[in-house]
Amino acid sequence: MAAGAAFAGCGQPMTPGLHPVTIETDGIERQAVYFVPSSYTGKDKLPVVFDFHGSNSNPVGQLKRSSWDKVAEKNGFIAVALQGSLSGKAPGTYGWNVPHVQVSQAILPNGAQGGQDEIAFIEDAVEEVKDDLCVDPNRIFASGYSGGGRMLSAYVCSGQDDFVAAGFVNSLRAGRPVETDGKWGPDAANCNPAKPISIVAFAGEKDAQNPYAGGGSAYWQYGFKTAIKRWTDLDGCKGNGNAKTVEGVTYTMYGTCTN
Image (cartoon, rainbow, N blue to C red):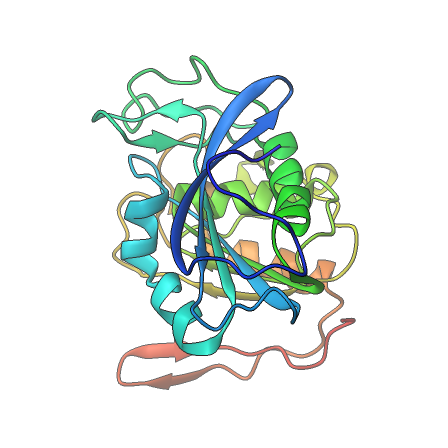
């Protein structure tokens, strides 16, 4: 149950702006932030975008990075930023206890110490938002940055079907990394989406933390193109994506997919 503001679902107006909330999962209080646009009346069901922070960050910091709150205000939807359960390098910063992979202590010094069930938390948070605010359950989206995108990848792979589309920045995964015959790739048994899902993903070739070509920390290993290839298979996409490069940026779009 959320605490920290008087939420009532559909039927009641809500003070616009940021609202820190507490969501209980498995008897443990977890933290999140709701952003409610000024156009919110409590009568019309609005879309929702969940925003997942990277390692050594927090919900407010992530909203400053992503600007989803500003976009939500302009376009009339609700933004929700959740907080990971692992302690970051600095006070007030956090990371995600991504399942099935090793936590890098170079990134989060305390490793998995104190880590909670993030899948259960996200699932509970989605249901809580539906109860608290007037939302359209068929228009719930998500995006993640770095470690937050890895967490979002794991959530979608776990078979949850809350999100109709998901966006990833420097973070797309398609299951935990496994090595077969000297080559790293995603574990097919570790990613079983409930249904095909629309995906947009961004990656940079100079990313040292989550390398474009693969390698890096134990949690990473296979590269961006390998992750994309796996998702095109999972989503039943046809063709080669018709890659185009404009001003040094390569765009690839798979327009014919199962969903």
